[in-house]
Image (cartoon, rainbow, N blue to C red; front, top):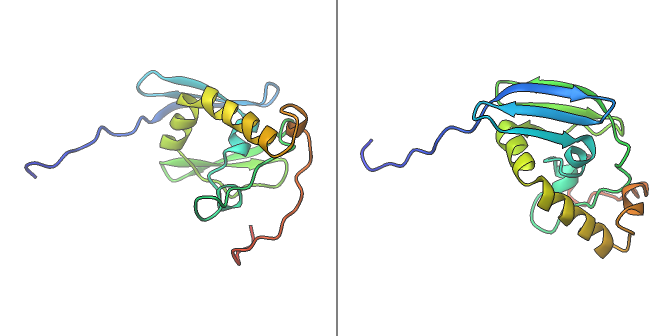
Length: 143
């Protein structure tokens, strides 16, 4: 097709390692980028509707995830993984593109999370340990 723009293909992981003791997922991509993604960051930024909601302003602030662990990491086709966390959350599908984005933006995402904890009335550190309060989902779906 003449005149059409083609974007470069998204980087593909060449290695994905779960480090249970240090609670990180290490991922290396075919462009040479390497990231060490803490389980807590993965859980707090889950791409699931339970965390993100179904639209802007419907996000649910995640608390008490500091000591979260990964109980399983399942492949989803050739494009993603689905982590199973120790709090029974397993509905997030993490595409390669999303994992790359989390890795590239980890410092600013972490700061944003701590700021959101503080804005919600939590201490930046204590909020990481405060258990989640179950809220009724107003969207009609069970999450």
